[in-house]
Image (tube, rainbow, N blue to C red; front, side, top):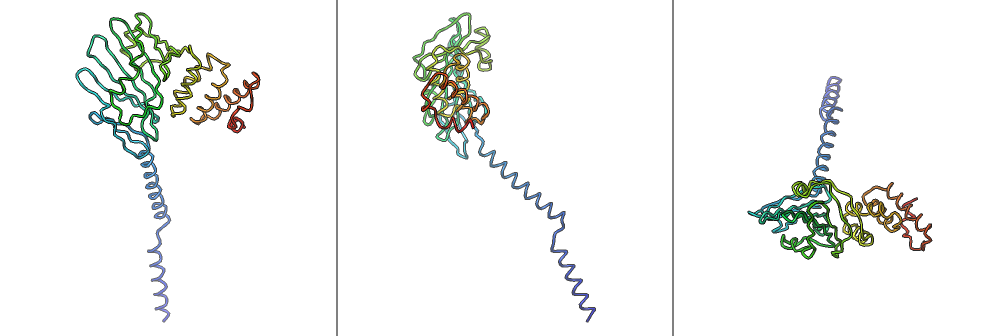
Length: 293
């Protein structure tokens, strides 16, 4: 009887030890599950990252787990070629180069991703030939690329003047209403600028119409082109340090791109100028007070 009892106890202990995994096994299983979850999370992040590719004559955009096809935006013929320029997770550019005539032409279009589709921010066109160099930038507002083609892009800014220069290299900058508000100078010869374009260092922006510049910066912020808005607003403040609203607009842009420290500095400067210039403080947005705490 005792022998049977001992045998039963021994058998129970043996079965229990077989059923229960070791601490090492538990740790290994936990690590395996963690790796699987981590891999899945990384995969989700990769799926969510914006991506744009060229397929034949079409542009394929993957954004927020959605695929959108933009037809006939890619042209590769004898006289025209298209290059996709990947910039960052907020947007990309398309560069078209035309070599059909003695005057060579490059057109660059900058886009950002949005919930409603890709939006065109601006168009730059540069021409080089016997007359010298001409380069314009035209900002575009609320231009969704759905159902748009290369022909639609080409027509933008067609009415702007071609101001060719023989010696210096400068770009005329227009707002979305075709109003010139600034020029940008480059430290290149005319031929060298065309050859290098768009891989050129940004030159100084000289603002001639601060109101148009500020309005354009505000419009850029509204469509989510925060980096482009930031560049303009910083130039406005550098050249027009008493332009009160520019500090508010810049602070809002900085807040959106998660640079809260610099945003607070500009909110504070905006509020200080409002007080020193005896402006109506009731017009100060409530977010200013909330964000400088």
